[in-house]
Each structure stands twice: as structure tokens, then as C-alpha cells.
Length: 461
Image 1 (cartoon, one colour):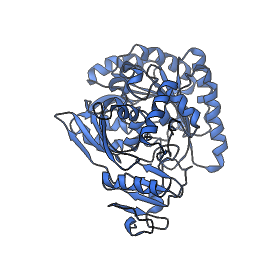
Image 2 (image 1 turned 120 degrees about the vertical axis):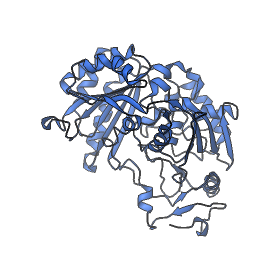
Image 3 (image 1 turned 60 degrees about the vertical axis):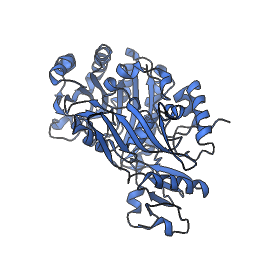
Image 4 (image 1 turned 45 degrees about the horizontal axis):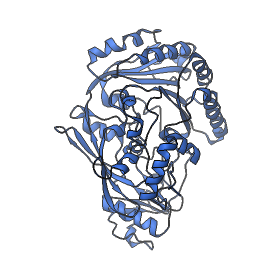
């Protein structure tokens, strides 16, 4: 590990440590979730404080070097690392301070959701977090934040109270409803376009620590009937009923009959955010429909629910994602989705159909930068495979499946679920009114587009 202050490109006022090509640990530190990404920063600057973050930003801007920000490294675009530039590494900022009386948590910018869940659940509290425990807090929150319990608690950004932000000109500022409120609006859905958040403050909610939850599995031949039933069931379900549908291949696990392992199935993730006894009643129709070939719904710790998909989404696979919001889900749309989703080209591929409604839909569209709050469905096409020789096959499958669903899309997308699909796709995700407002905000806080290695919002002309 190199002392960055002793290098020819010394970073002034930097108290952290750095890694350069050839240093021990460099290749591990530059690795990200998506194995298709192989980038080599000139330096990985591991920050130990908010002042370190500001110093690294100032250095990158002064030296006119491209800048990336490494939080969890989970973005499918590999935004955490940049070739030949400065990787601002937040993984040294990983403290979680919980105030159980005030029901708040102060969370370092480099934390993962597994770390946050573990700390908040000690007091029976939580905030909507990522569906994979290794997901970074920063990327998820700034992209608005979708998670299993969003129908009950809203998006992650809906529980955000305050951030400390390092800006493009090297200042540390606070953004909240009362301090820099327009910036705070933009940070709730606008991604990492306006600065680097070194600390998040969240409002916490009573959750668990034991919930009724788990996975139901149905054979692919039943998928159409199950999706139609779930569509009608969730439309009338209370906010406490959360979860979603996942077209997957059955894992090679002991609980799966051997002939079914590796075969396409429909999984239903179900959970109830409330007393377990109430959960059995609310989920009753779902638990009885079919019935499922396999049911793993049971009382379980909330942290276990949050980690259920970790093994199904291993780090180091090749990934290609895209996503859309659906305006409706008629029978024709169900048939189109099932026809493609039940024939994956990789056993690791997932297509997730996530219901909207509940607390998400009761927040006005213009309250945060993220809109599209009334869309009834968010569909995430998540292709994973290990062999580079299969890249073309898997990418084509993903694109063709998404294209088959286009007649029912709203034209908008959740940016945390898509790859690098161009500036028009970013603009369309927000809609013209919100995007224009975000461009004006970008012009105010980052007119030189220092923070551009992301789902980029260009400054207003």
C-alpha cells in the first residue's frame, strides 16, 4: 500500500492510504460485482474521513483526472472504478451509529446494507435496504432505494433525514429538508451526480426482529397462473405484505428435489412486516394457492430475509441488466413474459417482477427526484453467467425479453437496475420536468461534471 502523499501526484491534505498498479491488494481492491468490468485506476485512494474525501475530489479536479466513487461496487455498470483515473474509495467509512431512542442511524458512506441491518436490528429497527446484503448504502440510497419492505416503509430515500456531502469544489456541506433543500431533493433519486455522501442519517422504523417470510417455488408450467393470481392478490393486499416474483432456475440445494435442480421455476418472495400471527392470515391465500411445490415461508430473522438472495447473486459473475416500469400487467403481458422468462439461457439469470403500491405510491412524484411512484410494477431483467464466450447469447436474450414487454412499459426505469444505456435513457427515467430541474441543480453544484462516472445528468446549458 502506497502513501499517496509521497507519490509524484501527491494529494494535498489527504490522511488516507492509496493503492497503485503493482501494489499488493490493488487487484482485489479494484474488483467489482460485475466480472465484465475490468478497469485499472491510476490510484485507489482509500479515505479515512470526510476531509480525505474532499481532498481526493479537489485533487482529481485540479489534475483533470477522471473520478469514480467506490461504495459497495455493486453497480452493473462498474461505476466504482475508472481506467487511468482516481478511484475515491469509501470503504474506510463504515461506521453505523444507532440511536434507538430517537430511532435514527448515522451511516458511513462506505457501508453495505448487511452492516446496517445488523446494527439496526439489535434494537428491532430497520430502514428499507437492498435485496442483496453486499449492496452499498450510497448507490442504493442516492438512486432512490428499492428493497423488500418498500410497500410498508417506502423507498430508502423516503427515510433519509440528512446527508453530509463533499462537493465538486471540495467543500463539506449538509443537505436536508431545512439545509440546501433543493440539493436534498436531487440527492433522493438523482444518484451520485452532485457530490460524494460521506454520511447518511436515516429515520428508522420498528421491524422484526422476527418476520414471517421466505420463498415459494412453483414449476414453470404453473408460472402464468401464479403471476395472474399474484397480480390480483397484491392489488388488494395491505402495505405490510411485501415481496415479489422471480423467474429463476431451482438451486442445487438439499431442499430441492434432484430432478428439479437447475430447471426453470417461478419463485415468490413473500414477507409480512408486522406480527407473525397477522402475517399468516394476510399471506394465507398466497400460501395456499397452487399449492406451491416448495414452501420455505416461516418465521425468520429480518436479517436472514435480507440475505436470502446472496448466494443466488454471487460476486464475480458476468452481468447484463436492464429494467422498466410497467403501466399495467394484463394477461397478454403475463403470457409474453412467461414465454421468455421460462426459457433462460443461463441458470443464474433472474427476471424479477416487483409490485408497487403501498407507501411508495403515497409520496407525491415531485417530493423527490425519483418519480414513477404510481407504476404498479417494476421489472428487472438480471442476466448472469460465468463464461465470456456466452456474452453475446446472454445479452441478446436480455434485450429480446425486455423488447417483448415494451408494449406495457411506461418509458421510465429505475436507474439502479439498468446498465450503461445512454443519456436519453437517463433523461427518460426522470421525465422532462424533473430532469430539467436536475440539470439546473447539476449546473449549480457540479458545472464541470466532475461526477460523471455514473448514470450521468449533464449540467444545464
